[in-house]
Length: 191
Image (tube, rainbow, N blue to C red; front, side):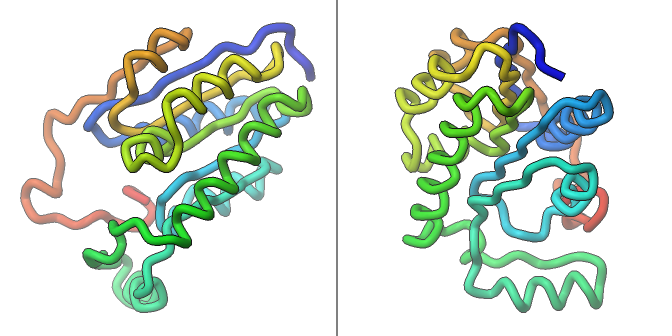
């Protein structure tokens, strides 16, 4: 189902739920017969939404973060229902840089092809904060997207330039979070 004009959404802020909101948009679009792609940057491979999106026929591409202790985290998740992430989970390595570059290249191709009604770039602003993608490159992607492609951008730290180039800007702010009480992220709820 082709539409004649796709808009640009920004979901940003320090609160929880930006990816969840983007997944909701993907589910809604898929339910309406739209062709959807979900590209995730720099997150570990344990996100529960990815298998669900694939089952709905969403094209899922991961430029995900690979921790050297990933196998240990997966074992913790299987045994305890949660994983205690280590400092290595958050250190950007050469593999992460290559995966991000590759995922961004695919994003440019998918958004400009005219084949997708909705493309979501999850955690793209983290990639910008880490200087793996530039604001200029993302602005170029926005400018070069096909007219019918709806684009959703998520992550903390959206730049003013990206916000100005967007049609929707939603700030997700933290008021209260269980992590402040020492409660770790839980599989199936938080990831």
